Image 1: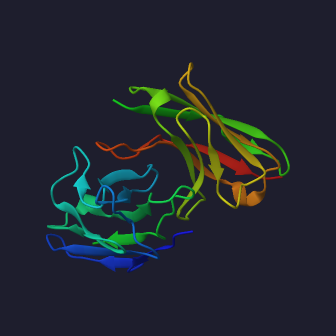
Image 2 (image 1 turned 180 degrees about the horizontal axis):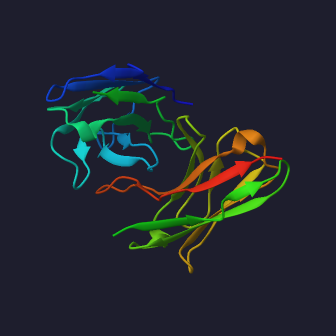
Length: 113
Length: 118
């Protein structure tokens, strides 16, 4: 199975600053035939289901503010939140969907102000 | 707009069975693979199972293999998860998830809570 490792486990960022979360996969998530990285990012707030932010590693889901961006390819990926706002406090997860089964998740990163 | 509504959760005793349902609307259900993902209280996300759009293939996570069964009814637009011989560590929120395509990512329901306790 592909192992997804996020770093850090938690971080505190000041309002208006930039937050950076890393996700590393144990094998490449880049499918050569379509040049797509099979990697998604989610935001989860207490008592709510995960909310999709990014898919194909860098495609922002409709309605997601443009301060959220995804980058990376192959085995190393980054979620960047620019201009942190109070409502961005949450746990963030990466997920690979390159292989089925399973679609493994990272362990989560807790973001605080 | 995609809507996924899970039901069937509750409190059950170890060793018993339970069936979860997920009613789908807002998309052509029969064209998409569907997943179950769970989250134990205070823990991370764990992928549980997937079923192909036509129901021809099903895969399970190691922790539920041989005990859980995923199925679907494409005429009713409903996804199921049969939980058998449940254990305390099956206690979790269970989410129904619509698979992705080239133009959109995964869509999640609100979840249904399963508590295994004697």
